[in-house]
Image (cartoon, rainbow, N blue to C red):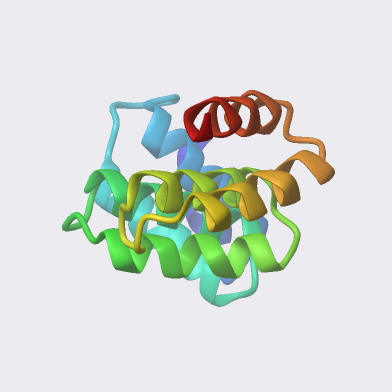
Length: 136
């Protein structure tokens, strides 16, 4: 199955590239291959996949298959969040809350958590609540 996904992805199928990258990052179908996953996430992101941008940002945050790059991660995540990706908005909130790849700012963290919550990301509500408790 992965060979078929690789063939389609190599032919420019963005969804196949994204699906393949997710399988590789999770180790489904064969062993994990973070480096190859990042290559396919990058290809899909360049072709306009918002979800691939989100995953690429997560890889940069953790240094999976690429050098750790918090600023690069925030750039990917912000672009995905601005395109409506709820998970990316949540991660942007975390970046601002922790000062990872962006200056620490509880106001900007709350902004992104509210965006994530408005897009249906349930974990954002507890993040907002925790921020409010820290301000007391």
